[in-house]
Structures are given as C-alpha cells and as structure tokens.
Image (cartoon, rainbow, N blue to C red; front, side, top):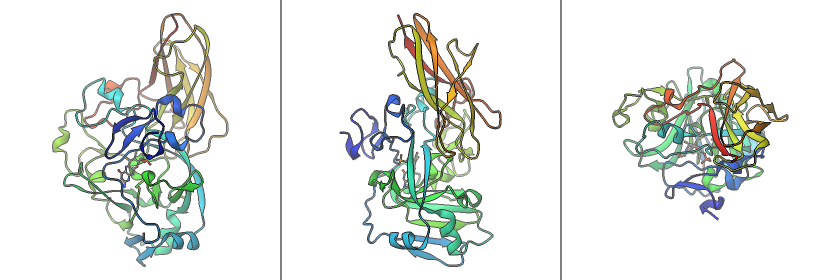
Amino acid sequence: MSPWGKRDDMLVHQREPFNAEPPRTALAGYRTTPPDAFYVRNHGPIPGADPATWRLTVDGLVRHRLELSLEDLRERFDEVEVTATLQCAGNRRAGLIDVRDIPGEAPWGPGATATAHWSGVRLADVLTHAGLRPDAAHIAFAAPDVSPLADPPQPYGGSIPTGKALSPEVLLAWAMDGRPLPRIHGAPLRVIVPGWIGARSVKWLTRVTARAEPSGNYFQATAYRVLPADADPGRAGPGDGISLGPIALNCDILSPDDGARLPPGPTRLTGYALAGDDRTVARVDVSLDGGRSWAQADLDAGDEPWMWQHWHTTVNLPEGEVEVTARAWDSTGAVQPESPAHLWNPKGYVNNSWARIHLNTS
Ligand code: MTE
C-alpha cells in the first residue's frame, strides 16, 4: 500500500508532501473513483485537526461573524450530496513538458482527475446565515497548511466569485463517498467547487471570508495563472497572467493503456470528457489517422451534471503502430485544441489538447 491508503501503483510525484496520481487504467470503468485511486495534490505539510476542537470562522463582508463547529454545521443546515469531478490545473502537464521543459513543476499525467460523492452543507446556506452583504464580490477560503512554495511562504488559500459561491453545487464537505473525509483529502472540512480547477476546492478549511476583491493569497494572486510563453515564472507577481477558474474542456482515453500491445481488429476504447462549470459535453470523436477522419463515440448514460462524462466506442485496429486520438466538444460548440505546442505556458497549466495513446498490434 502507498502512503495514505493509496494503491501501490500510484505514480508518486513527491513523498513530502505527498503528491500522487493513479495510472490511467485505474480510472477506467468507474463512475466514481475508488478512494485508493483518487489523486492527491498538496503544497505543504498535511495538517491534522481534532474535529472536536476545530472551528470554522465566517467573517469579512457579512452582518454576523460566525464560529461554527462541525456539530453546528450538521445541526443548522441541510445536509446535501453532490457527485463531482475534481481536476487539477496541472493535469496532463507531462504533455506540455514534452514540448518544452517546465523546471520545478511535476510531470502530472492524466490521473489528476477523479470523481467522488461529496456530502456536507451548501456554502450558500452558510453565507446566507451569516448575512452576506451586497458588496461581497468574492468568497475567500483559508487553510492552515503553510506552503514553502509560496513567495513568501504562507498558508494555502484561494477564492471564488460570490456568484459561483452561492450556486447550490458548491459545498463545505465533511464526507467523501459516504465516509468521513480522509485527512489527506482535507478532514475535517473542505470546499468542493464543482466545475472549477481543483485548486479552489480548499482542504482543511478554517476560514471563509467575504471580500470585495479576490483573495490575495499566493495560490490565487500569483500561482494557478497562465503566463505568456515568454514570461519568467520566477519573476511573476500578483495579478500577472490569466487567473484560472472554470475547468477547460478536456478528455482522455482511459483504456486500453498507452503503449498496450493488442491483436489487430475490433477493440473497445473507453474514456472520460469534462466540460467544466456550466457547460456540458456534447460529443466525443475518435480518430485512428491523426485527425484526418473522425468517428463519434457513444456517451454513457447516467452521468450527472457535475461529474465527468464517460464514453466508449469500438474501433477496428489495423496492424502495426497506431496512434488513437480523441477530442471532446462542449455545449457551446467549442472543441479541444489539437496541439500542446499551442498551449505551452511557463507553469504548465491547462493542457487540454487532443488525447493521444499509442497502441501496437504487430
Ligand atoms: N487545499 C489546501 N489546503 N492545500 C493544498 O495544497 N491543493 C489544491 C486543492 N486544495 C490544496 C488544497 C489542489 S491544487 C487540488 S488539485 C486539490 O486540492 C486536490 O485535492 P485532493 O488532494 O483531495 O485530490
């Protein structure tokens, strides 16, 4: 077993703090991800909090400052469950590193994406109870894990606009798949912001602050931003680049595995697509000739709005080396871009270029 109850075959990017993703095939075939295959992304030491003494502070542009225990949250607000996919903005960075090196950033593959049932209370209900003021344009989240990666080192945090914070799918969650939230995933309480980059789903939450401006935290103001290709990330400061929020349209092929040897002939392909925020996946296409011709995959029934959309199709594999490509379209008619070279950025975020695997049938 890997640390924190994860599968033995996790690709571990860092031991301290633990950063790891499962192989792509571990995600195949599951509507929700088995907890031992759920990726882990941390920026500092993992905090431990005693649920009995832990408190959540709600302050800033609210009429009543609140100090809430877990029991208060359970007693005062309705418990809700949302099935949602988290995706890290660094998912598939390895494809960008193949274009040009990205020093200091881990080469995440396709496994920084995972889905769970999350239970807790609506952030909207807590904010309403606190008497959110009309001048509150952003809701900031703070946690105790001090990250040495931040400049200067500081606890992890971030924010989302009030419009999203008041949407019913945004949760303060204490359970994952019907069990108490594991410590590595943010116990006793974390934010879940479905449809937005994983960075905004702040773990080990201790404070929710209503503000006029976005959070000034390093991970909101300086990191998780798309810098121009010629920028020096070492010199990036607050406000530089494009701040990431809603997830960009993406997809991947989950089985067969990249590099698999298979007999030629009919082969079933499966994968996922994710449109992000209020968009939905409209279509997934698959190509065996580098995108000169495409066949439509079938979208699996039963997937819910805030979770990934699974798809499958059967293709007839020719003999030899085959590159299989997939691309998704969303409900606005947008399609994934073809090449990671067009997307390369100095911190390696948002690689949503066409998914590609290589198979060998000889
Ligand atoms: N919250 C805290 N407090 N510290 C962190 O390092 N990482 C963020 C987010 N919340 C992080 C955090 C990032 S970048 C992602 S992608 C998700 O948590 C990952 O959640 P997971 O580790 O539960 O998969």
